[in-house]
Image 1 (cartoon, rainbow over the protein chains, first blue to last red):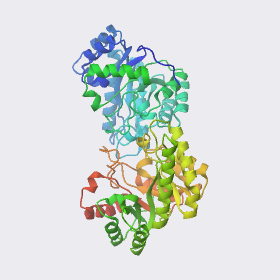
Image 2: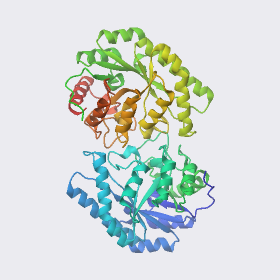
Image 3: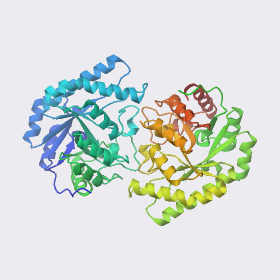
Length: 276
Length: 276
C-alpha cells in the first residue's frame, strides 16, 4: 500500500473536473488550495491566448502537467486519418504554447473496422506525429481506455496493449497514462505497471473512483472513496515502480458538476487525502 | 470466418430476449419459427410447475439449452455466501426439473472487498455446489462478464480468468459460456477460445451486438449487425475449436422490448442469418 498523502503538492486537478469554472477561476482556486498542478483540457483554452494562459498558470505556482487531449487516429478513410494527424500536430503546438510537456491521447476506434486495424492506425498515427513532438519537446501519452469504450473511443483497452505499442514506437516522445478508472479491473495490472515503468513509459497517473451502479458510461465517475477501486493499492504499485509524478484527479460527473464547485473542491481535497 | 448460417436449427433464443412474452407464448413462437432451442431465465418460471414447463418445451421440439442464472457467490459475510450457495443448489434442482443440462453463472462481485477475494469466493462457491450438480447431471457454466460489470456483477472479466478457474475446479460439471458482448474486445480471445475448447470447458456461445453509443449499461444490447462486434469471426473461432452447440441469442434491450415482439423475432431471424 502507498504511504498516506498529507498535502496537495503532488495533486493535480484536470480542468474538466471542475468544468463549470473557467480555467482562470479554476486555477485561482486550485492555487489557493495549495494544489501543485493542473492538467488543461483543450475546451478550456477556447478564445484564449494559449501562451498567456500558460504563464497565468505558472504565476499561480501551478505546474502544467498535460494537455488533454489528442488522439482519435482511426478512421475508415485516408482523409479521415490525415485530418486526425493534423489535429494532433495542432495539439502538440498548443501544448508547446501552453508549456505542457505532454499531450494525452484518447487513441480512438472506428466502428466498421476491426480493433486490430484500428490499433495499427493508432500506431501509424502516433508515428506520424513523433518528429513534430520531438521538435516541440512534447510527449505523446497513450491512455488505454476501459473496454466499454472499445467500440468508439479507444481500441487500446489494457495496459499490456499500451505497453506493446509504446515499446514498438520506442521513442522518448511516447509515454503512457495509467488511469485507475480504465484499468482497475485488470488482473495483470500490477505486472504491467512494473513493465511500463521499467521501459520508462509511465508518464501520468489519473485517479477517481468507479461507482456501483454507474449511471452513465461517460459522466458518472466517482470521487475517490465513492466507489470500489483499490486506489491506495494501485498508487502503491505506481510509486513502487519509481513514478514520482502527480496524482491527477480527473472526474467527469454530471452529478458533481451540478454541485457548488467550491464545496466539490473541498470534497476532492478531503477524499484525496483519505482514500487516494 | 464461419460458414454462413442457412437455417435456425442451431439457433437458441433466451426467454429474456423476448421478455414481454410469457414462456409458453415464446416457446410456441420459437417453435413455429423453426428455432431449435430455448434457454430459460428463472423469472420466466415463476408460478409454473417447472417439470411440466420443461415437457411443454420439448413437446414443441425445443431443446432446453440452459437455465439462467445462478452465481452471485461473493458476499462480505459468511451468511451471505452460504445464502448464495443455497440459491445455487436450488437453481441446480430447477435445472434438473426443467431438463436443462446447464445452469449459467453470473458469478458476482462484492463492492467492499478485492476482486481477488471475490474470485476466491466464486471458486469456493462453485466448488461447494459440485457434488449436487453431479448428482443432478447439471453443468455449472461460468460466464465471464465484461469489465464494466467488475464492480458488482462479476469479478471474472476475461475468458482467461474463466479458463483458469474452470481448470482449477477440474470437473465435468463445470463449463464456460463465451458471450460475444462480454468478450469481443479482448485481444487474446481467439487463443482463449482454443484453450477453453481444448480443456473441454466450452459449453455455451451467446450472441448479440455492441452498439455505439451504448445508452444503458445493462439493457441496450444490439441485435446482430446493429453494432461493432466481429461476430462471424468469433463464431468461426468457436466452431473451429470444435464447438457444436447452439448460437444463443441473448439480447437485453429496453428498445427492443418496447417493440411488437413478433416483428422483433422476425428481425432476430433475419439478422441471425445475415450477421451472425
